[in-house]
Length: 169
Image (cartoon, rainbow, N blue to C red; front, side, top):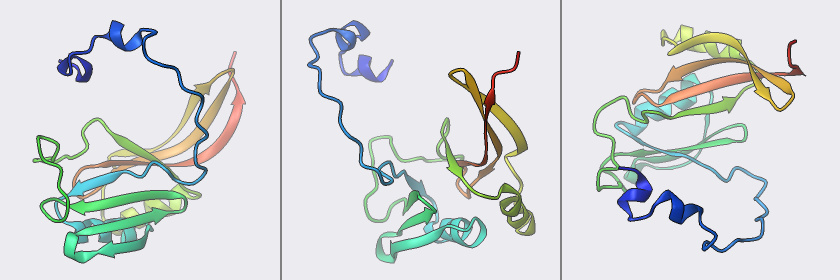
């Protein structure tokens, strides 16, 4: 059953013209989407993110098992399950890997330096370094990227921008 079906709504209802239109909202130009990961050990997660990956701790509340982290303009909250606010009603991950079906893409200037740090810490990559080109309109944008799993299994895709090029052919 889909999210909308569980609330008694059909696709036809959602797509109908009975939903009022709204003027386009102007987005805020700073990080406004900040994921919050429910983690099994916030201190281990903080060590992984800060000491190994190079995130910085903006602030933390140890009594709640909470920390706000940043990596350049990227932001991430980590929150200890069972401390502070924990969302119940089936929204708390119970078994790793947490975040199934989700990966966060984070831009970095140097994927090679990050991989070297991960190798030094003897942490395996979830997906190895690759060069990947994605179609965007009539061009392609390129990434050098890899994926690492955090201590709870959340997937992080770090990428280095390769610019754009015309579509082949």
